[in-house]
Image 1 (cartoon, rainbow, N blue to C red):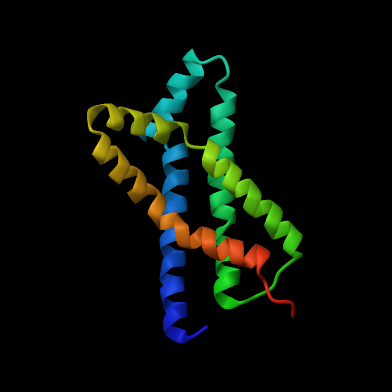
Image 2 (image 1 turned 30 degrees about the horizontal axis):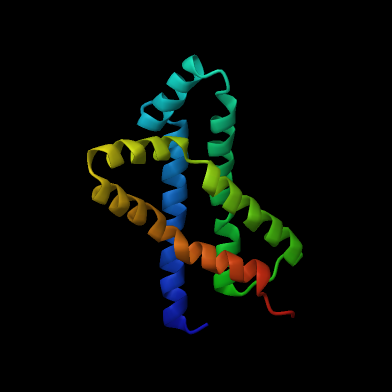
Length: 145
């Protein structure tokens, strides 16, 4: 990988780590709106543990996927590709299901202003696209050493 391209990927890795850390902080911080959402859900929803577990798994898999992103950037093979394939598929599953707070926020925005909801959704999804691409390439398209 050319040096300039690697610097861009390294900067992107720092961004992804910051986003994952921010998401984890909001989940565990008692002063965050997301934490309050799960406290209220705990008291009023009989199956509270399902969205809580899905969100926790989503956060953990996003943090874990900083590793294959770094391994992709530096072209370091680690473990068997099947491990990374399974982890990638689990990340996709939990990313699709582990956002109950964000989904409720988007529904609220949609009721107020649908174009803003679409813009918010695009701005939330856009930063993850290169990470998915790199982790997919690391898991499914890795060259054999």
